[in-house]
Image (tube, rainbow, N blue to C red):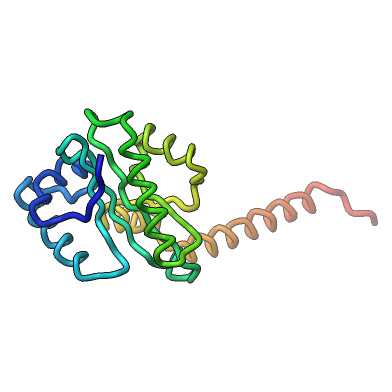
Length: 188
């Protein structure tokens, strides 16, 4: 097995490797996206796409990026984005080699933390990450903008609901007090 930086000629096979994480488009558009990404990354020192080859065939890949934990937490981290191994090459040490490349990249940049992003529904990938001591740090949830907008619109404004609920509760409490006063005989 060998590891190397991605080259433009890898775009087609990387569409197979990352089919679950690429934008929904036909294979030609996905390959064009990957060519643009590979070309961009080749000129950067803080990003690298590592390709694993097994017996001369592309077996897997990972996109490495030196950045911060988040825009609010400026602690440096290397993100190992979508470390993925093609099914026929699993259980041959390819995933381990990709993560070793991530560790080496972090050490090159003097970064003490490594994070990995795997598809939430990929049980094998998430178990592999857990075995390497990578624990969940955050959950990234996605939905189409229009769906979120529709849900927010259907729910109505939060402030209006809260104020309306508080006013209704005050009216209910006042009505109950009034009813109690009417039922309780006055001493006289």
